[in-house]
Length: 479
Figure 1 (tube, helix red, strand yellow):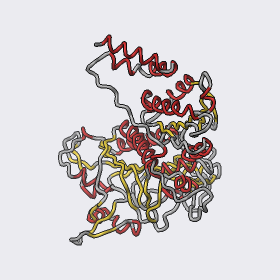
Figure 2: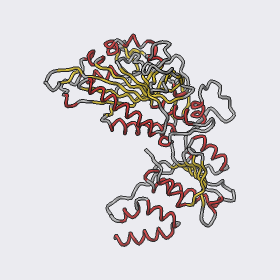
Figure 3: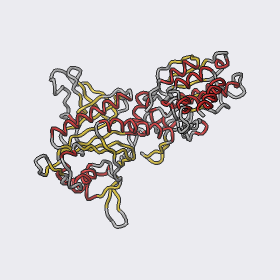
Figure 4: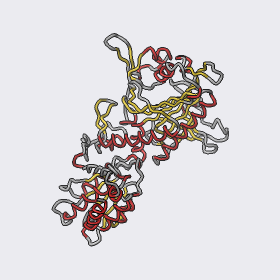
């Protein structure tokens, strides 16, 4: 049986283009591995995503006035069919945006679980009594969505979950110090009744956030956890290739004694940041004494001001919430003790929009490479053109890339709208921001086919044979 399978495999390699056969052998010898064992089922073939089948409604067409749009990330996301307005401050996240958001969540999961985070999912509907116990039912003011059920009981749609998670921990009556530190996090929709929602996903009334809550045995341990989360945030933003700044921040209505914000520097940012060029001190203006413009750390240099988009916020809470809800554990002396807490937020949809804001050109989206909805778009020639005879080559190439390279599985899309010119499809590809656009045109008709590869991030255009193309794309990092 094994000899028969090897015979058919040799026949398959004989009919494939030599370079394609060579690439399959390079790709972990996927076909050969199946031939070695009759018991191993064949690898499932991923259906090829097609541009013609993407659901990308857009209410903002080329040349249309962009009145009411307050930043270019909002305009670009509308033009590319990533989002669509539902009501003020609330958006439909369309398929390509959801793909990018899911990649970001996978990246966040990796970083949070690397420091011991455990993922949970808490109710968005939160009882008012919890918030009254902490004193925040009144403190939150009009920003909190409030409602009553049929029994006239009061609730809110959670803008944050300190009360809920602390009550959850307090219900665990046999919690030991050996189980701490405990880091619980979730990625969920949050709600804030913004008076003037603006900037698209940068300031909305309904949005996605990663919120983590830590419980430790002591202040020293809690501060160590605090620093490990801050380090994870810095590592996450570095992996995305984003320029960021960490600044001291005001604790606001969350509370606590220590707080930092993570910002992407941007003119459209609503936060005013003050920085010292001498000692590296940086702070949100809200965290400093009103009107102070000299550095409180080195006392030698005036602070310079810039603007930023807040994408993350960290707080050391101490026992602010654990004392209210009696969130206790049994310490090493077998006595009850209050847990020391921290809370840590990342704006998921805000990171998505902010990265587009700071990386993109005026008319084309540029993603952090890991977050692009598809890594590769293959563009065949126009039907009826001189090069139309190689349409089948483009289709074969797209299938091969999407199924033989583990890193590109599901991340290759074929622009099958062959009724349009290559130029028109290239323009659409630039607008959506695929990192690599592979054009199968006239040069692919040569005896040794050559493909035009547009690298969106670098702005380079490369002309590569099949082996060169496969070598380039086999090294693409995905999440």
